[in-house]
Length: 190
Image (spheres, rainbow, N blue to C red):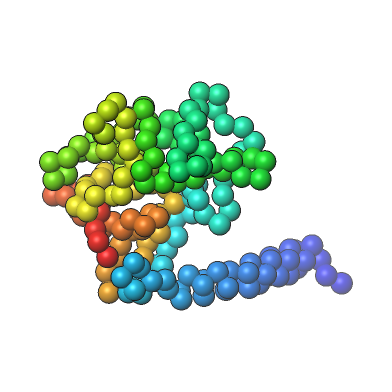
């Protein structure tokens, strides 16, 4: 007859076996690699899945904050609130990355501001904004050479030509350690 402690051991072992068998396909998929814009192979080393935005399982909500602003960009309605963009999908809203070119009249709270090649930029949670001639800010592609102090949640660690990079969407970063020990991130072309 099996006692309670033996039953717990068998149950733990079975649970671990099921968990490992479920992880094998995920691991093998991540190791196959993907190709960047130039056709060079990159390999995902580690996924940072905390609060991953625009992933396979999009973050959905049934309501957007009442202070959200409606922005129509290329015949698609987006709702913008403090740096977060929402798009209607199947009766609810999904949090999405903003498309390059969309304009907002108000930046999110506390954006990181910097200059790159003589142009002002603002950075917030993986999105880059540049002021327009009017009183708006346009979402732009990450400027090569830009330095930011933090990466947004949901980035991947990838290996390319034996070097480690951090990828968020289509943007690649390399880590740089400053003399004081702080790590910063530079936008690079891979």
